[in-house]
Image 1 (spheres, helix red, strand yellow):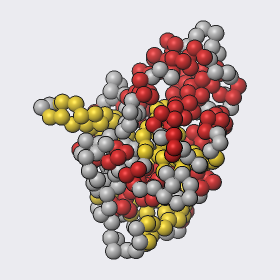
Image 2 (cartoon, one colour):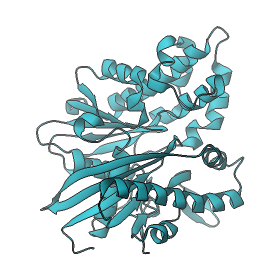
Image 3 (cartoon, helix red, strand yellow):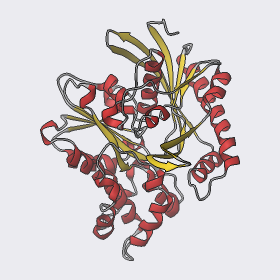
Length: 385
């Protein structure tokens, strides 16, 4: 497989939104120092309700159980295998390699002193060896740990793949992904990897989804329709924009540890009595868009602003958020990744297909300027069937 000039690679991603599994199959071919790629198929497999609930419960230290995490580690491998088999059947191609990010259960990359040593730590479940055996295909998984061992954040890892897939000699691009957490990658014109700026900006859909579940019994705000019914509550909005994570300098990454259950408890205390449920959804949706733009305006040099903004992830389907982003980023051209050749739900899965391919070719997949790692390194572990 390493000697092949062209490979068929599956990429798997299940994110903090806990809506399910995205699996892509791509044809990837090396051409000089670049790659030529083609998306062959993309499938989305929803999580069973009980599985999503167990994942959410066990990503909170106050409600997690080691026996449930153990079972989830295996269960996810079976669901990932189902997604790969479905995508393979759809594409009609024989897969050479799988890149699987796994499901993040806990992420704390800061190097604290623990058990007599200083280190950061992250946990992604969905066992690569089990997935390799179930599919009969080599798997690259557990991408974050090597970067964290070198003092990095272990995230975001997508920027290196963004660089490979979306760099452009003529225009500068800002690639925004809005999953449970939002992040972006800034690619200047004809970028050098060391000039790329990328980090998690804060909450994406995570807070909106949780409130939609609490208020309306729905998993998410479809098309942003609820947000479009309300108005922004200024008092609540001003409380949200004071969150300390927003002003923390990159490199940085975040997750449920910052914007999960504890954040929601604090938020509920800030909601004014005259604020309707629709107003709350509108306000937190505006906060998601604002926090992305704030991060851009604070940490991207003014002389290097983006010509084009490409939005992916579930948030790209939220019309309220997209309208807000277009207003904030004007005059930049704001589009979705659909317009750039990748379905909005497929982009991160495609990135992990690319990262797995880079690992097989013995090419480092992290960007120390982005993650804060002390040097470049190969990412992931290789599991053989």
